[in-house]
Length: 177
Image 1 (cartoon, helix red, strand yellow):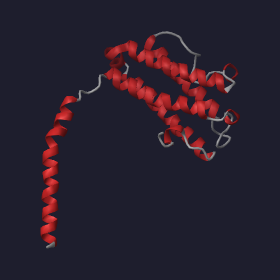
Image 2 (tube, rainbow, N blue to C red; image 1 turned 90 degrees about the horizontal axis):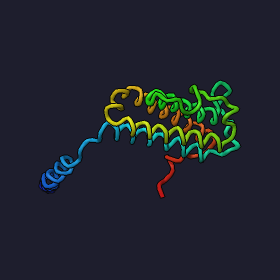
Image 3 (cartoon, rainbow, N blue to C red; image 1 turned 180 degrees about the vertical axis):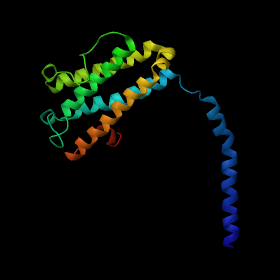
Image 4 (tube, rainbow, N blue to C red; image 1 turned 90 degrees about the vertical axis):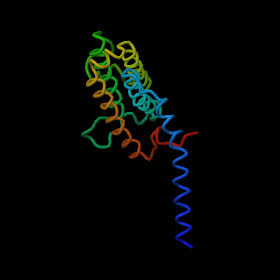
């Protein structure tokens, strides 16, 4: 009896898979891969938007927080990310925008408001540079773009630790509304 039940369930499972396979194949066939520009832009914006959300969300009175004395403060990490983003924008466009260097001077970006605006602009200017470059330009600097996206991602992970150390939940880890 149990053998017949298991055999029946197995057959039913195979039938469901067989009938759904053409639909899944059709869905896959209809999806075209993203262009290089779209793929890089989507990744840049995904990580950049998470960093911006953290910069906006983090309490202003904790912008000087460091997990230990030998690492950057939260504000220093945000400043560094924005500065590094501008290094990439300048490399890609051949222009000089933002503040020179991947560690802009603290005295130019002292407040939360200044840091949030600076990191927002760096992400937006990076997205504009990606769009302007088009596929040929993105492919020409693909290793740089992917490296700078990874750089933002590494610092995102670092800032997640800052959140957790303070009993806070990072914006991207919160339940969706």
